Amino acid sequence: MTTDWIRWHQDYDAPGSPLARRLAVVQRDLRRALADAPCGEDGVRRLVSICAGDGRDVLPVLAEHGRGRDVRALLIELDPTLSQRARARAVDLGLSEVEVWTADAGAADTYQQVQRAQVVMACGVFGNVAVEDVRRTVAALPALLAPGGIVIWTRARPDAGPDPSLKVRACLADHGFAELAFTSPTDARFRVGMHQLVEHPAHPPALRPGTRLFTFV
Image (cartoon, rainbow, N blue to C red):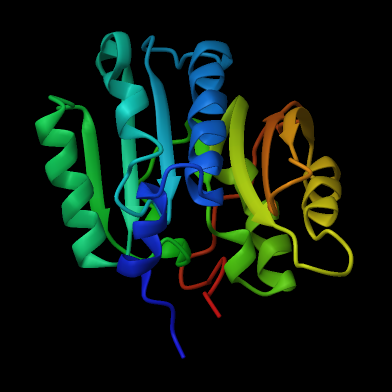
């Protein structure tokens, strides 16, 4: 049985819901990331949001204080209804520097022509893929990020058992990331992490065409 992602997004609109609370944390961390991440040589920060949904975590933040003018954002979302909502919302907010692709964010081929970003959003990904795919995606992040780039990610813990976010944090550390923030409320299952790439290889390997980073399960 596949998830109805249109219905799933409706929980964002319920005040005080775990998704609404998570959204507020992600947006807070994104504001910090856009302030702290280094600019590219052209003075612009690039942002890539994978599995971006309808863009509600990114687009309102870009619209604040005219941030959209110095940020080039690419939102990648496979569901055509959600991607079209993001596209329409970007237009409504006057964010002319935002692109929305209806594409598979789990396919390496999607990123072949994408410039390295100062900020990568990986929200709503790690809890929907196999453990091996989490490791593969984290290992690929240095190929998507510029030196000093920041990734913001989410993961929910189960009702019982170990917290899988601990393994995500350890995996990021193994691949050259330093933790900038980690939010883990005691009264909710969501976790939000923000990590910066501090050990960037001089020539990071490109993503291999024809391969996959992850597949939703």
